[in-house]
Length: 157
Image 1: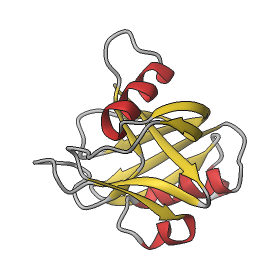
Image 2: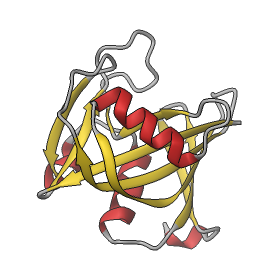
Image 3: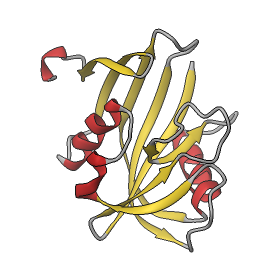
């Protein structure tokens, strides 16, 4: 089992995204993703969120919301990933350079046109539609999204 967090930091109709272009052998290479990473021993989802945001952006979150759990099942990966999804609308500090890619405030209406995982568009849409706390399972074969299940209901997609 593989535990991670991901956060979409939002302000003024824009979302802070990371263009993953700097890290060698990166599963997300070339894609635009939210801010986050792997849990360390003893961390809660919130602990991991706050640490990863600070490490990757230099920002300290002051207001955030836990939006859901996203399960990534991929028949080519050795483990299933359980991602804890957050949004944030309050922060302090100044953006710093990130060693994993380039940070950019992207207008929300442009996000869908950027290279990203197909499933990211699904949960970003759920966030935009203000879906209550959700469980989303995304099934992949390699890079291809083969199915999505929202709150146990396959008919939602």
